[in-house]
Image (tube, rainbow, N blue to C red; front, side, top):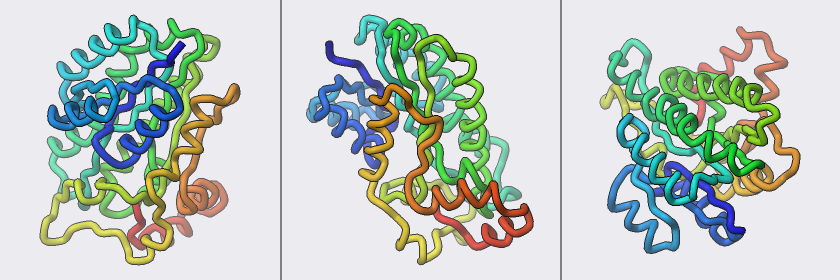
Length: 260
């Protein structure tokens, strides 16, 4: 029987690469996008398109209901990948901008997941996979809002994993470092005259979005999925350094602007 997988943020980057790979591996991919034109494009590519704006509570509710109807209330996997970044010094962020950051990257993910939990549990053996970031492990100047939303996702994922123990639903985190995608181009800068930029050295460690595929496949298909999957050298290094180094030393390293 073909397994149903919902992926959010499918218009480009990690989401689109993941959708194409899982379709080729025999999954039925429900591809969620924020724009109607992208949903239509997903349909032409062989996916089942779903219109979803994670920042809009009503849109999330409609999308969840559509997924339940499309899958007969049996969903094998939810890949919470959609999100965006608000960059700028914390003093330059309004409350509204911070709420927008969390609405998309965290609140919408929570709402969607909770609404789809019955469909995931009905599958008997299901997976929830959340796209975090190296900035869910460490924070850097100018990226505090985005990092805070990913820190929240990390803590939320840990709690959810423990709460779902014994339910048949496994929870994993994918933690990319710098990845070639439209993410950086789509970042909302709070200071247009002083945009937060990645250092030139970041290009040396940046990988294509295909780099996440081995991790995603393992999280979906292994009998024993890992709790966390760092992707790229930067993510691996930071997951180790934050445990080994004293805070003042890690601060000194991170004061140099780090890549997303």
